[in-house]
Image (cartoon, rainbow, N blue to C red; front, side):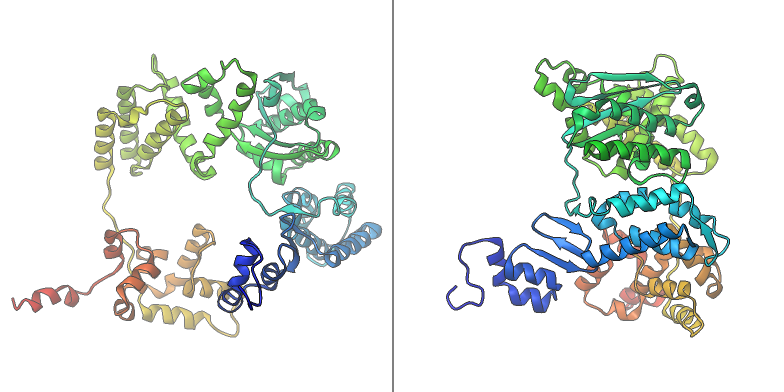
Length: 519
């Protein structure tokens, strides 16, 4: 508009941001690099020790930081020795660059951590091994090449490889070459190694075979071993597995291949190619369409979070093992009567172990998930299966024993006891979690910390856990007097039943309605 500090030449993003300049600056208190983007458009700005390149959409290492790393690496390599404390400082510095260099920050610090874990004392000196020197030289020689990692989290693959391995042989194929396979046998020395070793070796051999066809491409590798999938990206603490990961990376470096991996459970490979819509998909005569089938599978598997897929896959694998132990029972498409009998067996097992109905839910979710992927109607919706599941849940149901609220007096006593001049860093961390919140921290870790710190202040520690904090806050008199809408938003209740379970009322409060009626 005319007379504006930031006139709009055209309705672009920069112009719309400039219109709200004061809002970004004063209300949101945006960092300087954001304000620079609003003023000047996309640019390169430094913030929190990184260059944020909004032109190429990547994080980069500032020159000063890069020069500092190179100087320290040169010094350690020339000396040939260092203290464990100095090595830990270097390893931590490289790990802190993960945003700008990607997963290789973990892949190529394994030798450093091998040494650090074997330290007798932090300030003792050691002589660098050849493997450690090679790792340090790698960073010195290649850090410039890897300086710049995409801000965009999604990896868009141009080619897809599927690999598999047994105890004696390996195989794989490149989907974009029409499925022309690579096969081979392991050497006698490799035969007796672990399954993870075999899967990594399979990736190495298959990738090496296709390397010329994959130059300058982004490649996704599907493996049916979760450990191998992870090691491909971040390395391993086991030397023989780490060496294969480094060898695979060397191939990628030589042929300019960007590699990503995804775990594809073997149970999925076993049934998808034989049943349902996929049986028809592999028979497509059009080569352009048949090439896209693996990508479609990748897309469908991405419909759930990896952790959810892992849980469903576990339930499905357990069902398959059960069917294979019986005569004439098909795992897919599954018969409703067989599923009901399977649920009966799980129920009897859970009753003996007093373990609740989690196995029932896992089985139903896993079977439903696998049939959905195959494009088949789920037999878990059959009335017989539904009735069997309801009966199992009723038999296995346990009375809810909610944790007791932690009252304000106990919270104050705990805080005063640990808030001293001699408090350790662990004590201060717990107090922050205790009084502010623990979002983003491992639940099991905080639960154990809570038990350790709070148990001396309560009569029965089994009655208290992390939910006691929320229940105690919700039952506080000051909280009860707050605005109802704000209370609900602050607490994040999922439903009224949950709300009533958390808020504890005294007997006097419970009788208040009766008293008001004059009875």
